[in-house]
Amino acid sequence: MQDAGRLVALGTVAAIAVIAVIAASRSVGDAAAQVQLVRDDGRQQVDVLVDGKPFTSYVHPASLSKPVLFPLRTAGGNHVTRGFPLEPQPGERVDHPHQVGLWFNYGDVAGFDFWNNSDAIAADDRHEMGTVVHRAITAMQDGEAEGRLEADLEWLGGDGEALLAEHVRFAFKGGPGWRSVDRVATLRPVAGRVPMPDNKEGMLGLRVARALEMPSKQPEVFTDSKGRPAAIKVLDNTGVTGRYFTSEGRTGEEVWGTRARWCALAGRLGDERVTVAILDHPLNPGFPTYWHARGYGLFAANPLGQKALSGGRETLGFAIEAGSTATFRYRILILSETATPDRIEAAYKEFSGEYR
Image (cartoon, rainbow, N blue to C red; front, side, top):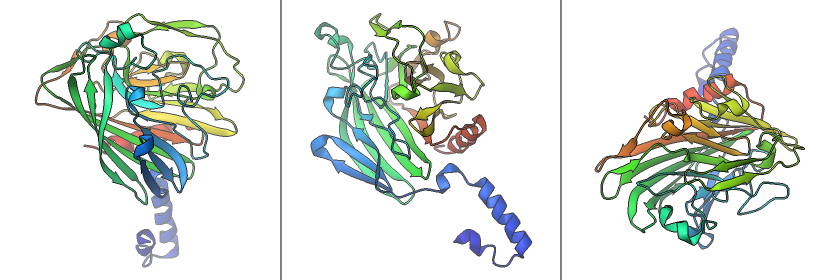
């Protein structure tokens, strides 16, 4: 081992001191495991294994209206993501059928709603919806510490015309007590300027398992950007343990509609303590992102919906000009522990130095 080799010429006391410094400086990713990707075109997915154990799958059937990662699992094998609508589980909510696993899209792209699209949309509304279509896997690589997957996607308006070409890069990592996914998306207009005006519905979304929701005290009705309602019923709160917290010190329901470098959700999945964190990147548009984080299980980073999420105090008016690109970089970190803010901040600092 290189670290040990550098200590050969040192005395015992000095060697112990250097080992302590090295150990203290190690990040989550240093204790990494073998990551393997298994492509299955018949099932339209790529399975991701960490030391032979299922972690997640890149799933891209046209019926989902966008490719997703589903399910996401902890190092202990528990599902972080809600099962509905792909694999419904007893006792979980069945609202918002478009909220599947981990996804990336937006509520207003040149007038088309990509966020809310699903098979549940009425036929009369489908012309208003956008679809992200998987076109090709362009790279796959297993690794001792990291597995990589790259794919080309296309964002189609309700008229079938291509608006954006997306090249997405995933990096999958894991080790004892942790898993992580980097999702780096580069968007390029296909024809001309593509406006993405401020909208509440966006952008990197994760729908969590029932146990990671916040306990609910009353039923509510949420509407999307077109005014379509979705009723959120009060369910049995037994085993429901989620609590949001951010880099800015906000917690619980007060996280929604605020900016932060990162947001984390801590709770329990059975006997396993779990913290799920989404890390924004300082080079992303709209940094630091607003958080569209709801107690019923929607955990989303929305850097573009500033007017909607700030109550009108700010407006971004984002657009991607013809001939240019926009890149969005995120890390999803899943820890088998109740992590402290300092722990998440250290992971954020590590991530912020990557993807320059």
